[in-house]
Image (cartoon, rainbow, N blue to C red):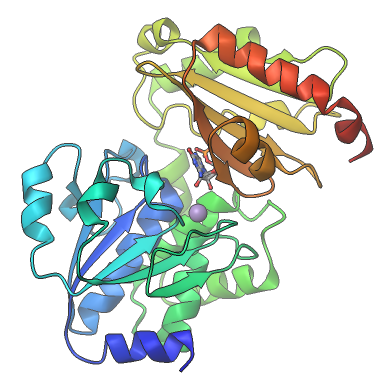
Length: 336
Ligand code: 5GP
Ligand code: MN
């Protein structure tokens, strides 16, 4: 039996389903979970989305987002929601470490585990694994799975909005190298299902607070640095700076990309001081592999051109660490 047939068999009778995005869920994690949840609901299953923690307010409009249970806020509700669950879907990550404290809670759950994900080097903790790092987004993969299950005609406008959001956010609005004809095919179909792209775009990107715009101006003017003689750039923000701009979750999304927009820069880093650690985002152009870099030097992973991780050190130490590593890669950067 192939994977689709296994999934088809698993879902051949109504099931109690839980769907879990990764920690600090982004547009793709939320979009894929919410779209998939709505599809399964139409097919007669009982679905709950449980997120490890809070998500940015600019995703509040997404159909179904108000019913998401947050483990960080309601662990007891999560325990109840997990009772008698038959299937757990893990969407947009491939390692239980990516859901933080929720990992140990679900790890030995008797339910069948299914992964749908587009990151490299999956950990095999599931019964059925859909893993394809050539795909632009997990939302595109959910579209493919729905199509393979013969369910494309059931895609509603609301489902489409969720999946479209995931595709748009993970492809940088169809501009990253991960964008393929299949991505555009999925997007085209979602428009046919009723999605209005301008509406989605403005709900995600035109809902900034003034504080966030000011933070962006500040980091571009004062915090965007080049590593001497190396084709690398970075931005860092301390807790004090976050407080100054009334920092809300999601406010730093996308800032890492500004480093890459500088002529000649091939790697960009973004460092945000958090409670006792530094959250790291890495981006690259071309062949330079920030997934490998994140795995070896930043306790993380991701994709070739977009990865993340964390460093248990101070912000100045994290910056020094990045600069040191970038200098080591000087030649590789030059030739890539
Ligand atoms: P971001 O920089 O936007 O947080 O993440 C970029 C990419 O790297 C995303 O695909 C995300 O899933 C992955 N990523 C971010 N943080 C981590 C991490 O701590 N560990 C791993 N394995 N992947 C991460
Ligand atoms: Mn994704």
